[in-house]
Image 1 (cartoon, rainbow over the protein chains, first blue to last red):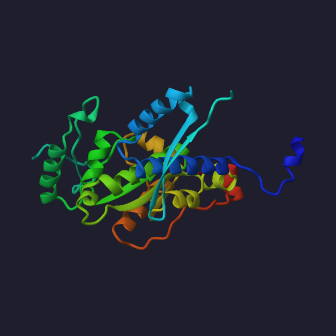
Image 2 (image 1 turned 60 degrees about the horizontal axis):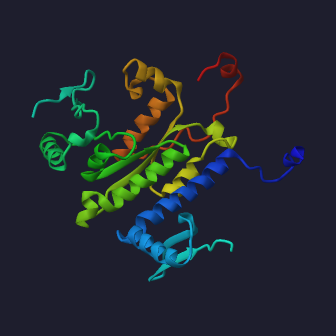
Length: 84
Length: 200
């Protein structure tokens, strides 16, 4: 019911939405700048090729990211397998 | 080099137009460097107005900068672009490349409307400062004078009594080292008189 929203303590405003969207965009942007070894796109493509030898997966099923934690660099590869 | 011309009102201000080509690809790094070196023999400050967006002209203006005024308005796309600019300044500018020091960054927030911020319709100064995390130089309030003075080709800083003009004057003074308190960042309650007569 819409009128219930009126009584909620924390009103969600468009400024709040803007900030959330911005934080997300900026985080994405910064991670791209900081973790962009030049070989990354090629590595992703070749890995995808290897996976596809065995399983048919669409492009977007492969999530690829490099994260830095402490002094460690972690290459994270997530492949969502299709429903069989 | 004498191809710059003098401002009508300020005899110490000179203006040099950039290449009026469709894009700024005609600019080379060496050429821009040579022009800046020549200018720096005659002038104390060289202000490069960089195009909106991040293309070659903007990059070259950034590359040779000692200080940068990052001008943003409280919109998602504008703040996001400013964050990109800050990324470039801290990694690709000449000072950063040489590892000597870094470009000194200043935040300028324009088109700010405290009344809309209070209503939750606009990103607040605090939001923008938190995201960009650079020192604030000045806030310029949203003002109808900006468009009208631009229409008539008069810099808004020359419009006596305009909030935006005053904000720019404060900003310049601050840049030159004066301690000037920030104004126009909180909602100004209109009195009955100005409500009735619609003063801005």
